[in-house]
Length: 166
Length: 166
DNA sequence: TATTGTTATACTCTATAACTATA
DNA sequence: TATAGTTATAGAGTATAACAATA
Image 1 (cartoon, rainbow over the protein chains, first blue to last red):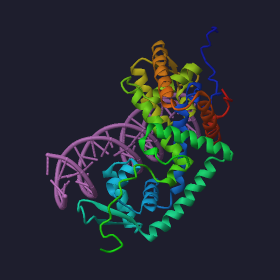
Image 2 (tube, rainbow over the protein chains, first blue to last red; image 1 turned 45 degrees about the vertical axis):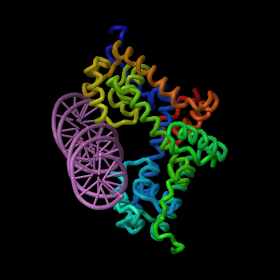
Image 3 (tube, each protein chain N blue to C red; image 1 turned 120 degrees about the vertical axis):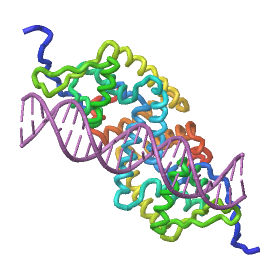
Image 4 (cartoon, helix red, strand yellow; image 1 turned 90 degrees about the vertical axis):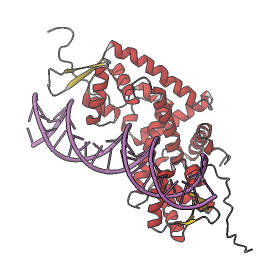
């Protein structure tokens, strides 16, 4: 039998990703961000609504009335994508569209009472996801993490500025 | 003229996402994680390789020789997905597949010298992305962020345990 | 001609299922 | 029968382009 083992035993002791990735902040962010996204998706499953719906309802709740273009810009998504999502919200009676009389090209989108109610439910779910996901961190650590993330978001995306600290 | 303005002026002062999302840790994570992902993708553009390729090469560099199933498990991706990615790496001569003589169902995957070389280049790129992305944070803050992220990753994904704090 | 919303298309990712060859 | 790898397929997600109505 030769020294250079002709039948390598295949050590089964490598459950995780390579160190090169574990020590990369970008990779960790990508990974943990993806986990958070999946948590949210599975938590919203069954409501018939997605995180897009939640974002739109939240925005309308804070701003009362927006055109579709403004919604798309605020949320950083494509106008053509928004159409279908708003269709779904309108079908469920959660938002209402009406033409802007000043500029008949525009649609003004408004939250309905049912939409406000649905938003409450979504907020509860989102809150629960947050609590569960950050469970291993104490309150101070959560704040630190959020602050650092907010700083990065603001640095790389103009939309994440303006609303200063908390 | 009525009090309830029949022609709302549409205030154009809302460039960003709703506060409800800005204050959600999960949403921030999702968002910033996505930004990091896109940075990495665009940085790798032109190399002909993706972050999957990078992860595989990194793993093989640390573990020398693995079966496809072990690679898939370690990286948390699907075995069927892995096949095509390995095909690409093999076409470029960066890895080499050979049958395991103990169990001829298995393919043993090995890094070639060219693969080791390519890995160096990818590491340089990944390092640059990290530096650029975390530019707004000082060294201590970066460490804090990474530590918190690693804790979350470990809590939600078994693969991210074992390798204790750097 | 430019802009708003809409529709249609295509392309990437990812997940699933079926197939083969070995065990 | 079960497992490793492979192939094929379908679905979600996203990006792009063309279009109609209005400005």
